[in-house]
Image (cartoon, rainbow, N blue to C red):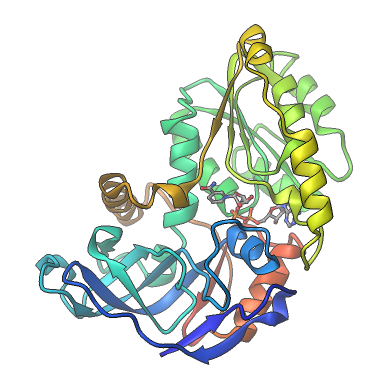
Length: 344
Ligand SMILES: NC(=O)c1ccc[n+]([C@@H]2O[C@H](COP(=O)([O-])OP(=O)(O)OC[C@H]3O[C@@H](n4cnc5c(N)ncnc54)[C@H](OP(=O)(O)O)[C@@H]3O)[C@@H](O)[C@H]2O)c1
């Protein structure tokens, strides 16, 4: 079958389409024909060579897909029989014609949820839910700051936070993104490229700070985030986009930035009444119940309209499509989710 692989670390045009051998189906697995695959920032980090969990090269990236079951193992429930439209989380391999997935990581889709919408859900919304609600413990009236507010995870956080009565604040990389975020209900969005967001958000919260900061950026924002916390405030760290400086790897920058600056001191945290939590969704993929339940809940909420992912753009499910999507992420142009869609 055809897969879109990263043959070596490099810029977005490094992607190649290749024939790869299909993996044998175990009794608990399904094989899904991919119709839409989500593109995530972690795929970019893997491509440049800054993602420690990435498999050996060459490999096809991709953590989430939607498509149609083509083959099901003997022990797969009838709800996932061949022909069923499904959404799945994948441990790499989503940028491909077909993918093998264990049944616990697959959920059937009702006809009202289009396949591209389904492919936009798992990573962004599971991360947003875990960061905001599960570990972040945000409650009505809380002031929450999310960095990368106009990105895939950022807009999923906004989607979940709005009906909860949370006061959401955000940073983003352009005035246009900030205006859009405020039009959608963010109390104050700050363009970090033109404004010192620490100063601006201190003013915006009338010096009271945040109950929760959601930080996918890295050491610099982490230090500022700690200073912006209200007493008993928490930071959830779930990324290090700041390590990506361009379209190729800059290992020296990565090592010096990360190792020299990212320090958490328990005594400092104790005296500040501050909490720090690290979150890595990919390291939760073996938590079968969490994955199965999380996917089923997301599908139900997409069906009843209580979650609605913002899709920034769709590209063909091809090497050129993957290159274009990754270029868009590097250039920080996306507002919401990028997808690779068969026939787009
Ligand atoms: N730990 C987990 O389980 C988990 C799961 C999902 C995502 N994440 C992390 O969450 C973050 C958002 O992921 P996403 O997939 O939703 O991506 P995204 O936010 O849709 O896209 C990337 C956005 O990040 C911002 N950005 C900040 N620094 C950047 C840099 N050095 N290069 C390029 N863009 C940069 C840009 O927006 P602005 O300029 O407007 O800020 C850009 O548009 C990433 O750090 C990702 O690794 C973590």
